[in-house]
Length: 606
Ligand code: ADP
Ligand code: MG
Image (cartoon, rainbow, N blue to C red; front, side, top):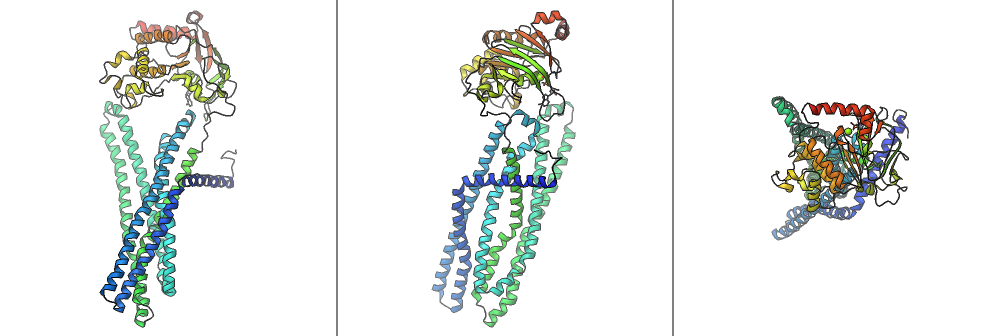
């Protein structure tokens, strides 16, 4: 593909047109799946149109009966038919709107589910390239806009022209000259309606953006409340919030103004048309060239058409916005995950746990900096424990996140059980590897649910066993509802060490073939860390464990330790060998031992 800088304007616009076509195709597919709704709706539109056209004719009939002096009974009978048709029209209209709005809601629901499924499918690299706010807005605002397009938009775009065709047909058959006459003010009116419709649309968009700003501010000050309080910034935060809130208020007044102008203009059109009819038609009636009942029919059609005509400006803006939104949704849905199973994927059902890196060089996608890992070759036999140490930024987390294939590597660089990583089904791979990331995430659910997160279902026995091994069980008794304690957003109810041990328990509950701990125990005190390690040695005998740590104490018992520096393996061996070597590892051990001598613990408090 040509890059944007090399593309000519023609190529760019062809690209944009292709994007629009793809969006419409996708939308058409959603509509197609719900075509039952829309077909039924079209039938109700035709029924409603019949009532819409009949009512002025029936009013004319009553007027005619009055003019001919046909008697009270006859008039009452004709008025009864009129009332019946009006009632039927109202009922049909009610169901008609329900049908089309239901269809729109149904499609909105489907799109949201599809978007969410896509978000779950996309790899980590996607999330470093797209902003969260942008993703959220596509899932929330854009689906809203598409719903409006499919509901109010489709309703008016299809119904209004049908009503017009019918009404103009009847009016022409009565008096062609008069029909043309009353149509005279329409172009000017449509222009005004369009301007006003755009203005309403414009202000509503501004209000929506203002609301987004406001919730962003709100969210930030809620999640940052600890910092706000520590720095005594409450007043400053309140001032900033007020500024945003005031801007939102100003924009809302714009909507109020635009909305208020609408009924005013709505009154003007029929009044103008009536004036024209009376001017010309009045003379005709006096001359006997037109019956009064026909005059009534004209007047009623004009009144009935006013509102649908008027909102066309707004509807067009809404459809345009919906189309743009559908394009943004399509863009997100069209992304093919760079990490997924392919035809080359082999049939692999379980994993023993042998890991091998062969001359692995890795750089993050879209980053212009050099490689994060350089020529890393490393063999971890199944059932052994590997320790990885190294300074911050040396590439430890990057290296281990390649094992469950969180980022993409080329073929021939990483092998599990001797099979190229890219050939192993993702489900098998991730089902047998448990990784506790550096910053693990707890959900706002109970402790038990958080531990059981990777399991098919929450099973109390496994939750307990995993918590025991992770040295979490001893803390559970102190929690208000034990395992059923809701841990709060991101686990705020728990201390840093408890959060880390919960994440560890989550990984242990999976009973994986390969366990990866990425600096998982940094906030756990040295004593608990030692206890966890004894448990791991016991429980994970025969399985592969990779422990990343900035602390030498966490890896000293490992079968093998590698030291990473600037993306390269600079040392490798057992603890005693590396100490004897007197290199980077020995230096790190020395520094950390001194810290311990000062009496302060190597890590933070639990
Ligand atoms: P460590 O775990 O040893 O502290 P990392 O593997 O986290 O090191 O980071 C190694 C390098 O890669 C750092 O320079 C870091 O800035 C960069 N890096 C880490 N994660 C990403 C990412 N998602 N996108 C781009 N660069 C990254
Ligand atoms: Mg790290």
